[in-house]
Image (tube, rainbow, N blue to C red; front, top):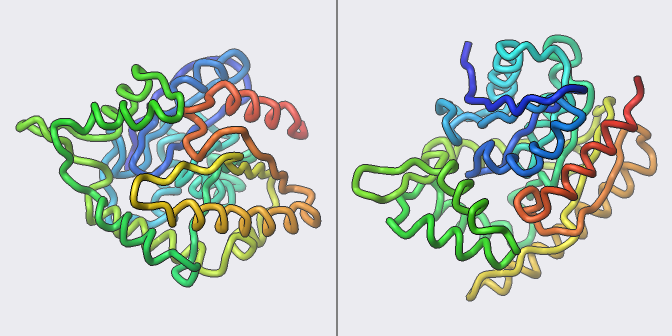
Length: 286
């Protein structure tokens, strides 16, 4: 049995389990969790190889799902709505799919958690960038750089600093080990390519539990020299939107929404994210 690092935010009411994105940690959920505890019990979890959780190799979604189930059992969580952002959204969908009984998922929320197949136009350039930055040793200025870049999205400096520190490991010489480390990061990317090889529609085939899928309403502004990424992101988001619209029109269990924020929604707009999740849970049957 492998237990993941978790933070019990407390609260009373329907159980929520919160999962973060790639290269991030459960600290990303602190602001939203503080609002959700008014009517929910809230548990946030670090995914394997992230934050303070143990690493996992090979990094596969079935193994991650088993570790989450073990962790929820250890925290006395027999049933939950699993809410994930980005990579965490992908895992939330897969956790709910795999656990109709033990540590049962009542429903799932996927906040902008999608991936592109290797054949998607522009995927090679995006993939090259991700590979180049996977598991690197970052400079002593890493935290300050994260605070500066977060300011573009209106993320408060204290929130940006706390979440950046929680998502990396300080090294004795003052540099930072970004997480997950490189071997696990490469395995993780391969797993996402496998899951999304045939697109979003195929991925969600067979989902028969209540699922809310949320897209970012605004695109991340491209960094200098990466103006092509804006076009890639817009094209990919439109393709996902069309697939989701078709799915939700024929599948009563799948709902689709959009939030006025970029992909960094739970850092940029934690109040809106909390309100959206709470409204979804209130509308669940039973």
